[in-house]
Image 1 (cartoon, rainbow, N blue to C red):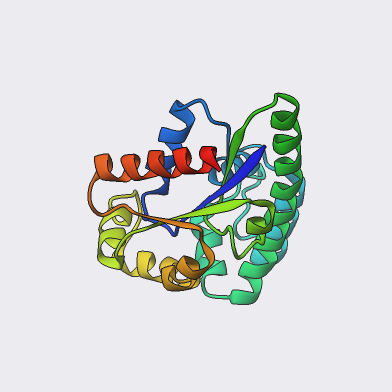
Image 2 (image 1 turned 90 degrees about the horizontal axis):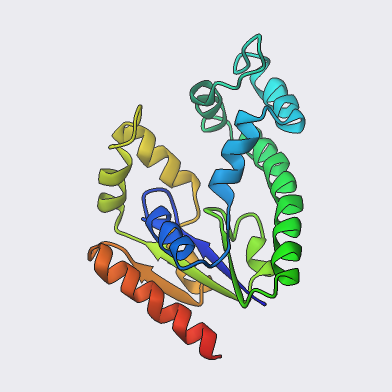
Length: 199
């Protein structure tokens, strides 16, 4: 089974590619989706670290996490951001193990690990190949500010906290530029998948 990593910063267009891969019936471990589940299901370990770093300000009486308050806290404090990421990365690691084991039993030829922080979280070490999804900063910001509650300043702050595309390009095996349109992007992805299948 070939494990392929898929990564890209916020607003890079990675979600569009993930949907395309899923439509091709290729299993994808979607890290963003899994993290959202942790918040919705009020994961105990996640709740504990959020309580600690926010001093309970980001937690409601019903143990619901306020992501807006939490993100304001961690993006102003690198130490707290690292503490939050450490807990999330640990939970995701165990979930990935189950995903890989399950698909190995199903004799799947290809699987994808979709993770925005693929290199930062060392998930790249679990991959045979890594595909980087990228777009110019201006394009990314234009996409991000369309999201609810997002501003240009907030978008820039999030991007600044992530590893640069220049650095990630040196670590990736393939790079897909998404600023030329959806058709070009998905065609480029299909070509990469076909190339990997032939190796």
